[in-house]
Image (cartoon, rainbow, N blue to C red; front, top):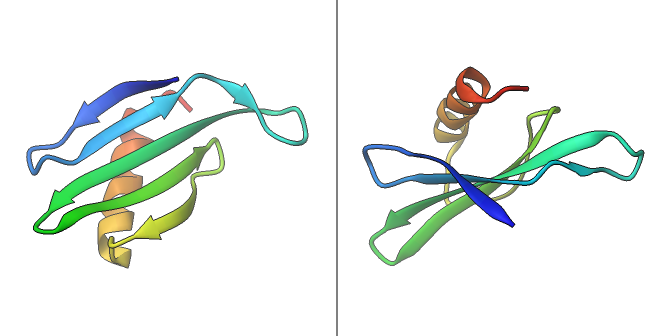
Length: 77
């Protein structure tokens, strides 16, 4: 299940999963980011506590850096 984490002023939604375990048994959380654009959405996943980004679609490197900074600042990891 995903839970709302925050919504940014530009309409970007950030949600997170429940705490789960990765392949090694370590606790982790999946963050999903989605931003509306003219013909759809930009989207990306970030996996905590490693802050590893995956499945980035439409966001450029600078946008991912800004999103990473936001998630690091406001998450409890």
